[in-house]
Length: 265
Image (cartoon, rainbow, N blue to C red; front, side):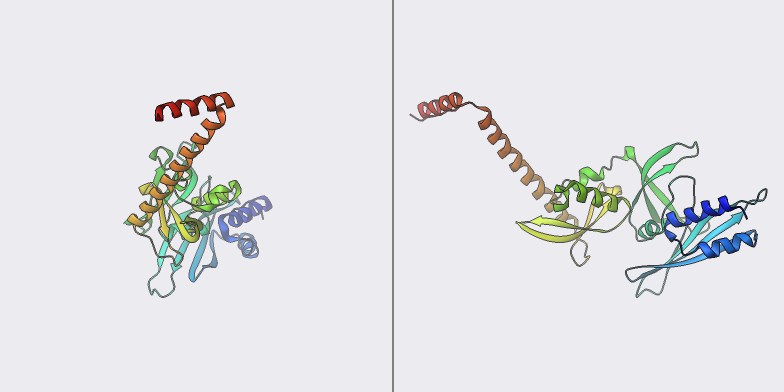
């Protein structure tokens, strides 16, 4: 058995989100020199069950094996029907199992991808549930950098407490880029309110949910955004006024007071 090939596949499986539990089965199948084989893996996200089948194939010319794809079956609690999607393994940044789940939930994931020329580019990826190929696989919609969706700028429009801490802000951004529905602390009328947010590159905004995961309508989300913008403007103006007063020396401040006194006479 080619140990280097095994180590490469072992790491590839691990970092695609399947952990180390499949190492024994992987080694056993490679040692048997089968032309193709599959490994099965189950995971739970909340009450949702995700069953994955990892597909491997041996090269026709060498003793090397390749991890080609994995098929995901998503079974949501209380729903008789399930959803299936196959994700292909590429040379670049692969879709992890958790990201696959998020995509199948309808959310978008930010990835560094590689085109046919081998060039790397960044894009938000989302499944188009209205468009499937001949094999029943949903096609992917890509929102490239030039599409103009800046997640950092978008979340900055909202009164989110975590944005005041650089480390918490970075964690929040990274979670959104992985396609998670992430909890965030919104500041409303001096109170802290827990809500959930998702990246929405197609509409260049955030999708916001309340503490019970009920989606807020567009009007409510827009009101939050406008309220935050007004608060920032008021804070900015107050800071400018204070800064202008501090820039004036004692003589200038006295002179301004005298001018205002004359104008009032």
